[in-house]
Length: 87
View 1 (cartoon, rainbow, N blue to C red):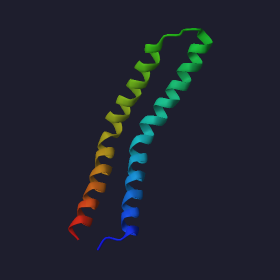
View 2 (cartoon, rainbow, N blue to C red):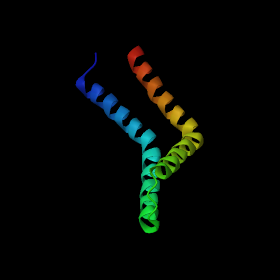
View 3 (cartoon, rainbow, N blue to C red):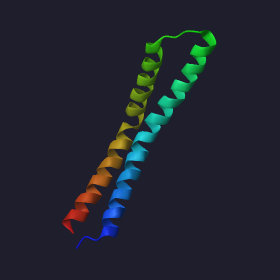
View 4 (cartoon, rainbow, N blue to C red):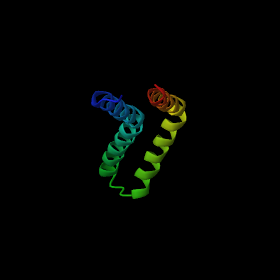
């Protein structure tokens, strides 16, 4: 029998997994964006593609470096869900 507390816990854990997986990419790309905005304001270079290229590079590097950890975290969560469905 499934009760509301179990459903709430599964949803809470799912949201926490999403936050842990997205936080490194979002925080680092935000930091790069702020630093580039300061650089562009100081040098008066207003090139829109400059910010995009650096943010894209940071996101790709984070995925290359932490991709295996992200996949393992997601697989652990999915396996936990399948275990709950089986019992």
